[in-house]
Image 1 (cartoon, rainbow, N blue to C red):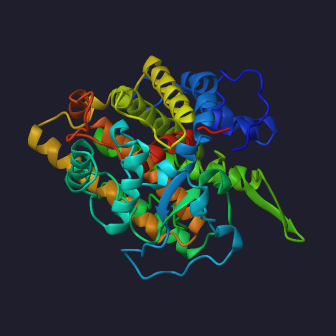
Image 2 (spheres, rainbow, N blue to C red):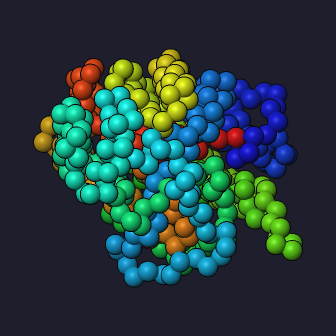
Length: 452
């Protein structure tokens, strides 16, 4: 959301995600009053997250997102839907994503491997070699042995890691760079059966749901029953922690997307000049306690839970980036150094948060059962990342893929603690690596949740 004017009493339980709507007097006080208190399944409260994000994290994340390394995201928006016949792409002009011309992409980003951020491969001679190797489809023999070994490791890594997301092949001719700052997330007019099918598949086919629950989980489903919303959530109490967490993450992701659509809505289009801004009617339909029968505040609390999970992941992955070998390389030496300094500063802030989610409480039971549940958890989420290729609106698909991949990367980090602890200081890790695509998605997705 665009940055709004600050208001007094930010620490009194107002949701940071809703501050723009609050400052414009659009948010009903009853919603504000209910989005407060301690979150379920953790010891953290809404006020603490609000204050921490507002005064420590958000200003720095905003600056980071504006830097070249994090503003350009390579994505394939032409991958076919793997689950059902295409509904046809949205013809509304605001659904269109404008790819970034090759000439605008920093040379250090577009050359070489998608994992290219190691200093051993970042001199001009080897940069040229990498570009030539990419064109020939092979590793150029003039590369140093160390660089060549790193590229081989990266190729093996892509086939061996337990990804939580289906990653785009960045070598595909259909993959293009997108400038995220020039393609903001907002309401495009994409709705109806196509959008409904995507979310219905996510909730009804991939979230863990007891057989005793017959009512749809999908908030968009027309047949929601006559219960008051609060009683519907009692079914969560019967699920194990891991399955509750899964549902809350998906609900929080959905809430974030809906908030951005409500805050940046196409209000009017006169003579080809669109007017974008907050849509209170749409916000109330999705989050007002009365109109949602008590579910709206729950959805917003799940957004806080999602933030907490990703905050924890950032604090855990810090050692990966603190190594001297890691260089967020664009080709501009000074900017690259400043970008890494800013990123490490953000990591230090995340470590200082006193009420982190304890991921060790998950998958902690019987080893065999825990391993099976973790794999089921991973495959369900990976399936959701594949569903994003079924979104008919390119702009919606872009942000859906990015935010899903960001969350998937956070989950990958949380459950790779041992591998991160064993990282070598001066050589590529064979046990844990992040592609540039994952790094960009992780930080941009985190910056979306409570963006003002």
